[in-house]
Length: 387
Image (tube, rainbow, N blue to C red):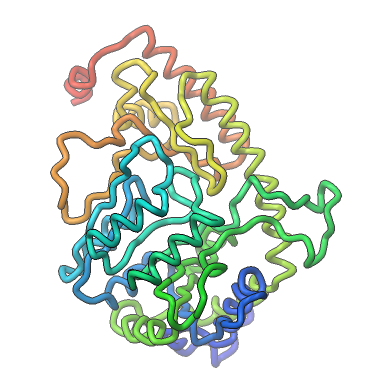
């Protein structure tokens, strides 16, 4: 790295202007070409990571209720519990078998509760499901009509596997006329300085550069000014040299080609797990159309490994890691009394690791499951024997 002396100074708490311009151009090019209202650098705030961005947002909110779904991203539990003037409010599905809350139900819940904001990942971590098209448009319209701020975590917005365009590898055009499928609420915003939508994204997942700690918030200009002020006392701003190093990563041709390669590679690994997991008795609750996660149902497995915590403990003995479902049943400040989590029989598998790791992991889980089919015991007995 060749770091200029000027880059050793603090960056502005809203970020390097050149990078902010690049981020605005990215959203305008992909999602707002037909819109009169366009993003400028003043609609972009660069932050040192997604969690830091969410913390700035929470610090800038007033005395309001903030809705959230379960299951959803684990870090929301801490973000929603940090500031006492925020009242976390769980938004429940009327139909627990639905992967996504229909927009009419969202309107009923947001309006009835008087939500001031709604925090959600889209596409969703851990389920790999996505609000898009008319439904995403409806969510944005409802937010506009109710003046309820949508806090849209779009960190996996390049990881889609059901697009209609043809990859250049398969004969599609390798130019600006042929983009892979990506999804953002930015497409449905009418006025970038009026509609209450804050987008959280960055280099961590879509660009696969988590070590940069360079992410961004896209929002109406007055909100960006507030987020900059919040950054001055919370985190001090993102790394200045790495913001400069990130500039080539925001080149539109690079993004298009990189996203095509990303989708091709991760779809192969997703399809591998979708084929192999049922063979060892693990059910996929909803086939993921996005992200690099599978929300897996352990209910059909023998006890005790149909409990996600027991399952993880046994996986670790076989050098396999997954995330227990209860971690996604977020409960900030323990506002909900839970006798048992509805996610106790679920785990999240990631197909981010190399294929050889996935192959070995499935093989080891198969051995583990075979053992417990022959040696079943209750979860309580398992807990006692593990003490």
